[in-house]
Amino acid sequence: MDFLADYAGFLAKVVTLVVAVLVLLAAGVALRSKGRKAPGQLQVDKLNDFYKELRHRLEQAVLDKDQLKSLHKAEAKAEKLAKKSSGHKPRVFVLDFHGDLKASAVDQLRHEVTALLSMAKPQDEVVVRLESGGGMVHSYGLAASQLARIREARVPLTVCIDKVAASGGYMMACIGEKIISAPFAILGSIGVVAQLPNVHRLLKKHNIDFEVLTAGEYKRTLTVFGENTDKGREKFQDDLESIHELFKGFVARYRPQLRIDEVATGEVWLGLAALEKELVDELKTSDEYLAGRAREAELYHLHFATRKSLQERVGLAASVALDRFVLSWLSRLNQQRFW
Image (cartoon, rainbow, N blue to C red; front, side, top):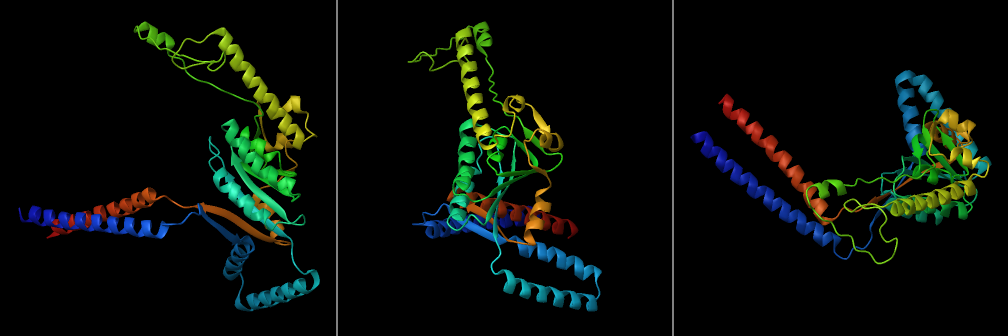
């Protein structure tokens, strides 16, 4: 009974503390975010420093003190001479795009592109590390349009694909003046697909009516609950074919070397075969390409971090507080057992 009483008192204190902390956090976040209109913040990291740190770590593990000293002296001398002889190095702006079905990452991409275009010159370069299996037409259309802004500004654009750029992903990739692919990355799928279930017969079996009222002959072609017609299917198929033709035309515009009817079948190819089809220009991983560019250019990685809403922040704080409470309770329970 003493244990239960102690535990009840401990639980009441912890719950009170958690509630108080959450209230303070919510008030603090609300005050800090009051009047703030910026949707997020641009983060910029110099990748040259990252590659240099990797090399230095390995050198410290492999070389002795005298070798390290000589190497660092030689590197410092070489950097000094390079600055005097060549002046400013070209800049490479690196972006990442990890696409889901809705191409949600376009919310960050649009701000990253706007930022780099405020500084980038034709002698610079933009590298996009792209990974996407495609998704909604309008969403990937917007994402592709963001990359098209770079081409229109006459800034060289290179797209690196390590895993997959298919369908909407390839729609984005084809805008690059140069497409670099890992040997076994998946590319292509220049096609359009749509599918939906229809439960009309199930509803009919159970004497359930479902009314679909439209104004406009083709306002609704195929439905999930209503009875689909051959005319509706034909119109739906015509719409898919129309989108496919637009897709083909878009890809052909940026990669005129493609035999578009041969590759726009909805098929996918691995990087090795994609090179033969001219879907890509070179086989290489993004790591290899960027490490090579780092020897001759200044690399800047851009990432636009969106601000979390008040609800998301409070939820995260609550989750952390709950985890701490559980760990504290388990620790106290173990102590009671040993007593």
